[in-house]
Length: 288
Image 1 (cartoon, rainbow, N blue to C red):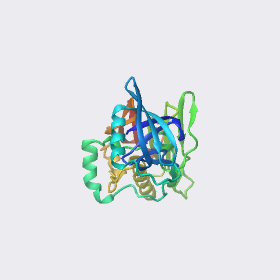
Image 2 (cartoon, rainbow, N blue to C red):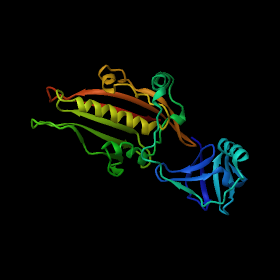
Image 3 (tube, one colour):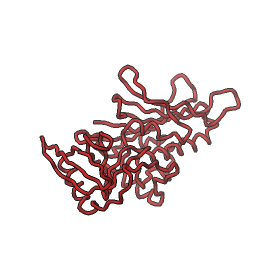
Image 4 (cartoon, rainbow, N blue to C red):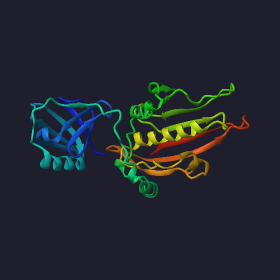
């Protein structure tokens, strides 16, 4: 990921992500500054390898940003090929992604499974590690979470239990819950989907919903047209111990100076105080 830090001017003063043809901020309420709208880029000074650059836009707006040399070079190259072609529109452009946006191309699923797991993902394959994005990953799968809150130095958001197989014999229903945990006010450490199997004899719908939830989760997390579990029975994979050992998905750079490795795993936990109940856990975790 490539970032520039706007420190002064007519746009929100924070880190913006640099793509090939635009600067973007946010993932739900998205703000965009197209490269075509930039009419000039002037490097003012370099302090301890930080470049301070002034931007002027066709709309009459301007801003100053700080960035690393490699990001400046990438941005300047994009400006030379796509910039100085303003349309005099109001900036920033504000977009809200469509709820039914399709992230994954299932036609490549089988090939992707082997490429993704055996070779690992590139930085761009992996989803945002911002805690607010992660809290919303499964909102449309009956697993909306509460706010990201601090509890004794740790942070989390989690859903309520979603009952799947509603039992008719007064026993507990099978259910699914979603948890996001971290030690930072801005970044998650662990994403976890938990499936509680209270009535194993009545779990057909639970199996279907748990697998469906995993696929939706991977869709939201990855953001690339590759679904590594598109045609896989995740419960069967967990039962067979195929993903019990964490699989390294790749490495992400979440600002100019910090990066982390991302791992995926799944496990089955038998409850000590129950003769038949157990739970499934599907986990993605960040490790520095």
